[in-house]
Amino acid sequence: MKQSKPNKLRTIALAALLATGLSACAPVIVGSALVGSLVATDRRTPGAQLEDEGIKLRATSRVREALVERANVSITSYNRHVLITGEVPNAQDIQLVEQIVQKIENVRGTFNELSVLGNTTLTQRSSDLLATGRVTAAFVDARDLYANAFKVVTERGTVYLLGRVTKREADRATEIASTTTGVQKVVRMLEIISEEELQSLLPRQPKP
Image 1 (tube, one colour):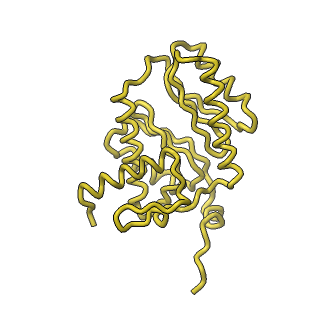
Image 2: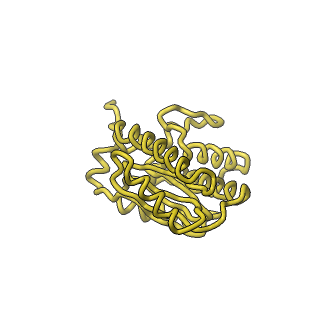
Image 3: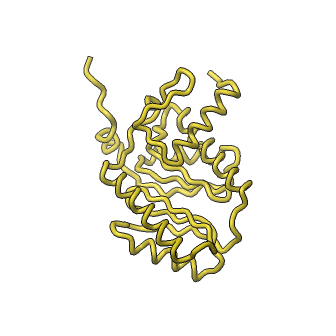
C-alpha cells in the first residue's frame, strides 16, 4: 500500500533521526506504527557499539584540536572501522586526520574519504541529511531488509553504506540506495557475513 505524502515525510524524518544515532532499542511511535518493530537489533555486540561511540567522540575531539576550524571532518565508527568524510584545505591535512584516527585505541581500520575542497554549504548538508533519511526510509519500507543492520552516511551526494550484512542484503541495499532521490553515488564499506551467521544473529521468535 502506497504511503500518503504526509506519512512518507514523517517516515523520512524519522529515518534521518535513526540514521544519525537514535537507538532502535527505544520504541518510537509514528502514527500507529511502532518503529522499533520494523528494524532488527543492531548486529554489533553491545561492547562494539559502546566502543564505536567512544572512538567517534575521541577522534572528533582530537581532529578538532589539530585542525581547529580550518576543516569540516565527520567521523563514523562501525564495528571499530572508521569512515572519515568531509573537506580539508590541503592534502597534508588528509594524511594528518588519518594518522590521528589510526592512533585511537581499538580502531581496526580506516576509510579515508576526505576531499581537498571548501566546506559544504548549509544547503548541501541539508540535502545530504535528507538523502540519508530517504535511503534509511527505503530500507525500513523494504520487506527483505533489516534497516538497522545498515549505517548510512551521505557526503556531497555520495552515500556510504556500513554494516554487517550478507551479500544478498548488500546487493539489495545498493540497488535501493542507488535509485533514491538525491543520491549520486553509492560506496559500500560493508562487512559481508554468511546467511548462516545472519540466522545466528537474528532475534529468536518466542515459541507459541
